[in-house]
Length: 250
Image (cartoon, rainbow, N blue to C red; front, side):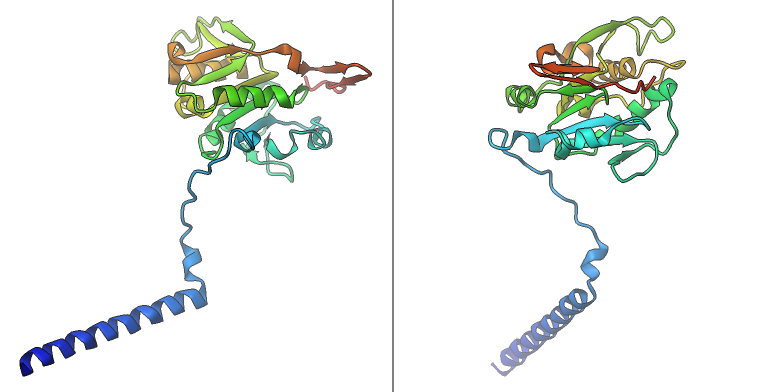
């Protein structure tokens, strides 16, 4: 009995020491904020597709020196814009860190495509030119219609591309008209951002090639856009007429 009591006492003493050490460690880490050294990964955010559909949207918006950010900041797009810039700036959310011109927009497209893969909290994406505009209700309608779709969805005014110089990547592929194309996360997940091709090519054809070589053309749901809700270069409705391309970018 004496042996058992002595053994029990040693166990209790050991547990007390372990508890004191653990408590001291927690207090020290809290006091010095050591917990901040490790950034815990943020879980994928969820949103209500019926009450807050736009929370799942990112509008990818390539900009240049002539882009009027003031105009777009005063539209419904404001909260969802992801301007794509050559270099860091106050409005930039995606930075490619390379100078771009009209002749190198394909590289800018590959740049923002890589970044989209990291946006795990977004279900839908719109690529919008800076001389275009899209109706909010139309976007919400498309988001609700294709919410949770298992297949890659690609909404635009699609064009067939012919490219004999790149028969394995860019020939006989469908791509969206550059002013507007909308797509879901399923399509972003399978984009082939490492696609190889020769010579300078249209940025929109390159995006179509990344879709075709990465997702497989037969596995993508291609949807024709409704141009009644998309304006390019000029917006006009009732007593309003706005030139969206007053200064030509190219």
